[in-house]
Length: 155
Image 1 (cartoon, helix red, strand yellow):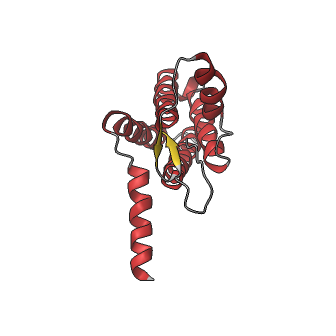
Image 2 (cartoon, helix red, strand yellow):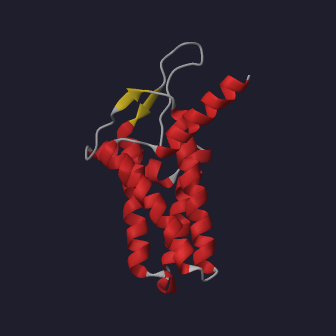
Image 3 (tube, one colour):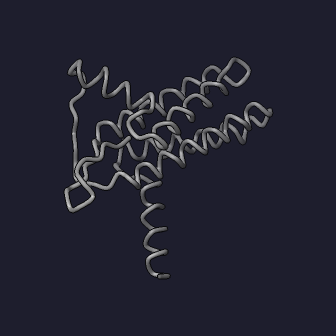
């Protein structure tokens, strides 16, 4: 979840790291709850909805359900304060997109009865979200930056 500010002509772009942390926390909590429910009790639909929520936020920054929760409820209530830092929002949107795709595929696998593959993919997303929450390392951002570095070398 990113908040970009400034014009394209040299102004600094910002990323609200607390918004990103909420997004990661929501992924972890919802997928854990989905797993506790189990696929036979609707857990696969919660995996799907979580993937859909982060997909909406990746495609339409600022309009995803977790982003709206952050901006319209948590910030105004004072429960959380914005923590903008200089940064490019594109790697974070890429990481969100990767997580969304993995969770949507996971939900399809769960719906099709492939429990091990479905939950395995969901747990990978949870693990990567936890690594980002705890250690501040974003695997999707790392992949994005390395793809761009590779493409720049080929030019």
